[in-house]
Every structure is written in structure tokens, then in C-alpha cells.
Image 1 (cartoon, rainbow, N blue to C red):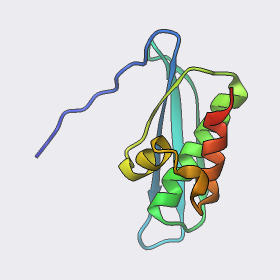
Image 2 (image 1 turned 135 degrees about the vertical axis):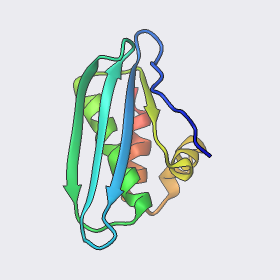
Image 3 (image 1 turned 90 degrees about the horizontal axis):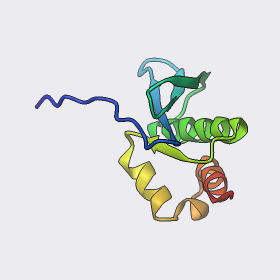
Length: 115
């Protein structure tokens, strides 16, 4: 089944962070990246990094963490985050990140609890 998808803007006054992670099956390389756009779709900033070997869940969590750190450093308080890893999102929304053994999830929890 093919589904047409498009980027949806956040509410006025908010920014949207789209993140993703990728890995090469026959390599030790993984990469993460993200882009931050305003309500008009204007790209405000972004990031990308090449990392070492990791599992898919860890890659996605690291990408989310780096994006949230960047947003915090740039002073964006109203953020909509879009991620294609449903399990990662569910763990964070359910408040279970603090009890998780992944360091990235605990750090994400601390970032989103900031005022």
C-alpha cells in the first residue's frame, strides 16, 4: 500500500522538529539528523551526525535527544516533535523514560520536564 505523506506545519508560535536515524547493515556506521521549521515552513536550523554502531531504538533516541538539546539551546519553548518510532514516542508519553536503562531516554525525560 502506498500512502501520500506531507509535512504539516505546527501551530502559530510553535516550531516543529522532525528527526530520523539511519544505519548501514554491512557497516558500523549510523547517522542521525533533524530539521527545525517554523509555522510557515521556514527552516530555522538542523543537525546531522555520524555515530558508531548502535541499535535502531538507540539511534532514534539519540536523534531525538540531540534535536531537543538544540531546541533548548536556541530558546524554543513551544515544540512539536515528529518521530517515526512509535515505541520511543509511547515510552516518553507514558512517562516511562525516567525508569529506562537507556541513558538517552533519561536525558530526554529531563529535557522535556524543564520549564
